[in-house]
Length: 283
Image (tube, rainbow, N blue to C red; front, side, top):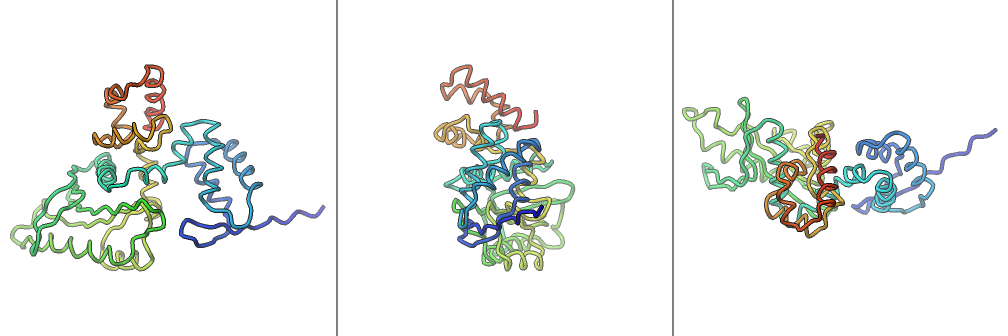
């Protein structure tokens, strides 16, 4: 019996570029949500059978998400992580709080929105964090449009700011409170030139999928630090209410469940939300 040749489909990415559909990438993204192998196989087979030339990555995601949501909503919540981070907008402030929280739960002492004196001018720094001799000053670049990546101009600018702050210290005033690591964090991606400059200059860059095994999505999954925007049990208005009160993480909301009382929820709905928050927060 002759085996049927697998049809290859070109799909369209958010950037408008085309690429070949990767069953492995779809399978890996579904597995990260916590879904079991049987569920993953079922979704991959269903989505693969519905492919057509020119289908967008967004449409593939929507189809997989809809099936996953029927199986178990909490898996769907984790699966929508990338989109949930976009929902932290339109301002960049909730994203800054989110990055600060990731560093705090990684053992750092953290402050958000600090004014720091440089040798030449003063700077408003998004996130300041330190532990065990590491003193990080981080700039967060939030984009609500997935097509907007960070090009080389941004790390050039951030690298210059870091050194202006660093140069405000002389050899006599260097101490454990002297910034010694500059970071640039984005929720999208970096261009190849931006990554090349960062590697050459010593600027640490963190994006949705970079660096490998320590990317933004890796850190979130590993620490169980999901933003409240992942849950399907809260409306857009309710999420914004919480974000306006600096409640960014599911784990924060779990520790401040009284915030749910301000939303006028029924007790049964409140308990469903708390149950999902516990699953998302690994508690």
